[in-house]
Length: 498
Ligand code: BGC
Image 1 (cartoon, helix red, strand yellow):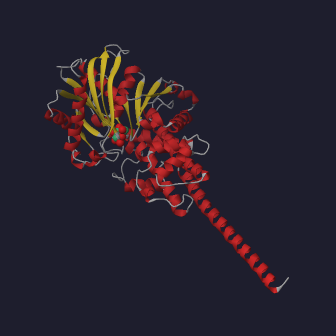
Image 2 (image 1 turned 180 degrees about the vertical axis):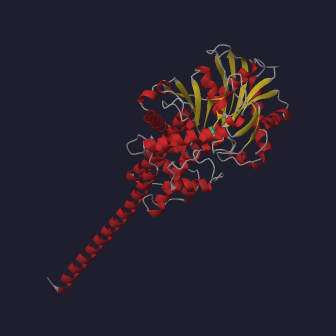
Image 3 (image 1 turned 45 degrees about the horizontal axis):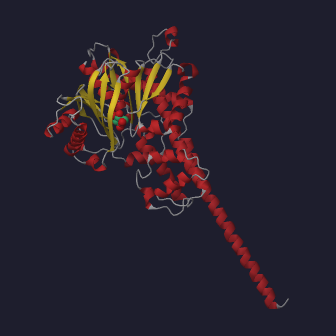
């Protein structure tokens, strides 16, 4: 071999060695990046862990806070609001009634016709529209004018042949926000939740605002009741099954109400009702306990929300927020590693990843996880490999599992407070046999998160059995209630008239 050939061979060896070194170096770097991401996932899993022992602590905390909220005004973060609803519809109601429901993301209008027998409940017309986002931070006048206008259009559609032509229409206003009631048909807004920000509305009478807007349009409609969505759903639940004593909403926001003995509502001593009970709107979204497994993502989400330091439980379990927790985890991972490729600034946009996308990714059963790829692309993350898509599914699972299990702990807390969890409640003085006696208890559940996100529902129901035990669980029936809030509110107005 000549000198030139030797030099050439040596150079070739050198080049291939350095190429190999670069490749090994890259592989080591990419492994290190993957390890960093796996570490973030592991930390998330640990921070979101909800073993049954921890859930039981949440159950106890919920029951204790309920007592505190009933004992005195401001005694707890749970407001435990009086609703002045002490009779629920029983099936004998007759006539035609309307409901207008302002929820978190949608508003609905419907009409029901009741024939005086439980089986004769005819929901005649339902309109469901997304709430235009500009209304959420407009003025109360703009918001209520819009609602009155929508109601006017609904009524115009009824035409001449409608049963209720010529008769004043009785309307329930289902209002899914915290209200301090002074009667069943009046109450002032305590605060906005779920991203609404019309500050001058706080402290105003909600029913009066709607009635005023209807009157200005010359509508012959009487706002006969102001009803929280949970209370509406309880009314429908009770109408179909009088063992229904608790209702929970898992939608854009979350909340629960239940039937309480008036003598247990200590803060309103002397509150007399013929039935001896009243529906209490817990506003459980604001529940807080040190036992709740909170992560840095929750803390940041809260700090950057329109209502910081408020609605801590809701921000861990409700539809508005689950998507944003997942987005924050993905964004964090994309900051420490390039496994998500060059991500666009979209991923930094709050709420760009919605919970229905989380559920679609979580429940994606295509072999290559195409749904996950599509949704990530829409959120500014393109062309991620299968391994990364699987990672995203896992994030959705961790966040939703925590939500479902905490939701179950909340329900078990209510059951404990009313002595339906098999333990005899947290007040002493019950005999052992009384403690063992279990009544059938129906928990009505409503809201898009529960209805449309199977994994959320399954985690919730599984955890409820885990907390209560197989035996007690046999007496606790969880019933889904589609459109329960609006239909139930109309039934409530009907029951006021009969
Ligand atoms: C509101 C509750 C409502 C719940 C579910 C919460 O943000 O404060 O009043 O019942 O959302 O819609």
